[in-house]
Image (cartoon, rainbow, N blue to C red):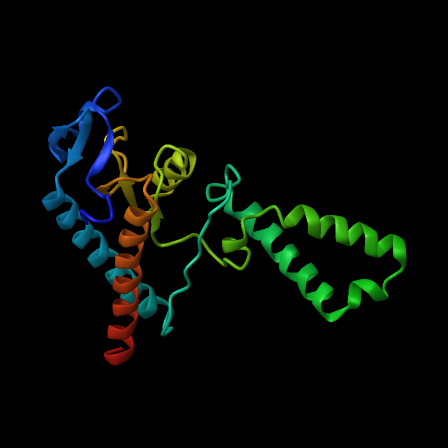
Amino acid sequence: MMEAGIPFSHGTRKWNPRMSPYISAKHKGIHITNLTRTARFLSEACYKAADLVVRAAIRTRCHYMSLYYINKKRLSGMLTNWSTTETRLHKFRDLRAEQKTGRLNRLPKRDAAILKRQLSRLQTYPGGIQYMTGVPDIVIIVDQQEEYTALRECIALGIPTICLIDTNRDPDLADISIPANDNAIASIQLILNKFVFAICEGRSSYIRNP
């Protein structure tokens, strides 16, 4: 964790006082987060993620759990207006299938142009959710400030959230907050790798003992 830069946070002048329980020291004008707490909350979050995989598999009688991601600007209301999102995603998948089979190219030019414009507009949905079929069971948020709208939507819908929180964030907004550097690529990668391992373990445990 130290090598990944997880404990090195923002400057002492730019911080949220609610983060004080998660800060262990100050060094050269920056706050150092408490790695013991980071490890504890990360462990809890991984356990929760793995447990949700098992429960989702039992509920749907499936041996898998679909994972979706958003790494581009999301659309406001994507979750709270799920019926609209779902309709658009269905339309996207249908048009995408027609494009792949070449059906669009066999249509009259005017009809094909209209459908291609629709497809182009629908492709504005972030690539990681284009095949999503329902509201997620849990959401992991890397940048609380950047994804504040998504976080509020999750809270409104009662979707459990796990957030990486730097010293200038609010730890009280997420169900589980993991104090960590949310700017360093190595820090983010290490934590997400932990989640990947936990989710795979949860999936494997269900397959072994359904």
